[in-house]
Image (cartoon, rainbow, N blue to C red; front, side):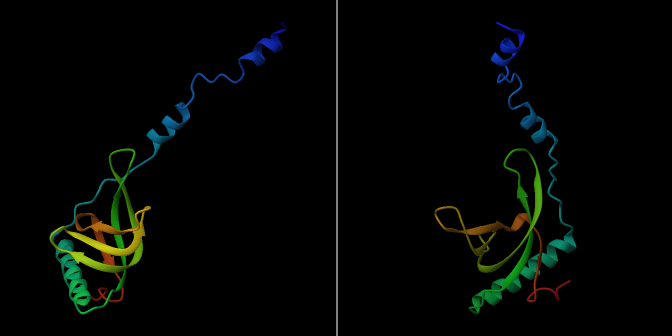
Length: 128
């Protein structure tokens, strides 16, 4: 058997299969969730209370949420911004339910109030 034929026999062998993926995942940067100041928390609470009042009156405002999304692969995550119509506010469970559906069960998307950094939109922009 020639040297070329012997080399071809082992060409598909990859001793480090998955190594590049592992290095890439390790190099991927994630953030940590920022703690809100007392003032920021007060403003956010005022906005949430206003949204709850409007929903109670039968309106479902479209708002933009900036919230922290945990990473599924490692500790930390990133901030994401999304605009969606609010369905309801769960004050006891500390969640905001949106009309956006997720998964095959078509359940409504919920945002944890503890993960929300900011809410903006025509309804709440005057609160500063």
